[in-house]
Amino acid sequence: MQGKVAVIMGSKSDEGVARKATEVLERHGVAYELKVLSAHRNPEELDEYVKKSNADVFIAIAGLSAALPGAIASKTEKPVIGVPVSAKLLGLDALLSMVQMPAGVPVAAVGIDNGTNAAHLALRILKLKYGSEKS
Image: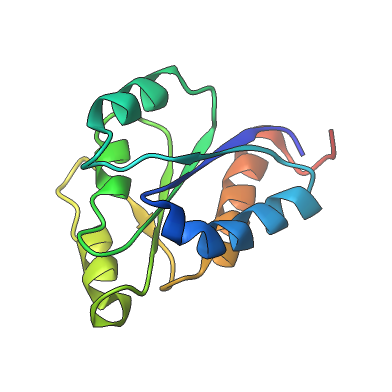
């Protein structure tokens, strides 16, 4: 399938959730780039990456304050899919952070630790743009 997905983790500890997403993308032949960029620890690098990225969709994986998806959505008009990670409070804190974005800064959110559904949502978004044919 055509298109490209940027999978961004807030920290290396989110790798297991990211792997769930990248496995789906690989099965469907979708190009992706996997990065570790924190909205808090790497704000300038994150800003530069998002602005220069040729990805069609961003998957942002984060726990705790879960600022990453919102930070990305504030820097792009492209779709952002947030994946909350079960760190503290069983991931409910991260989930609520992602779904409470201000008007004009939308983030789609999937279930806690559900990198698989994030990838499937990204595939549906790519199908809208490119159709369902294989590349």
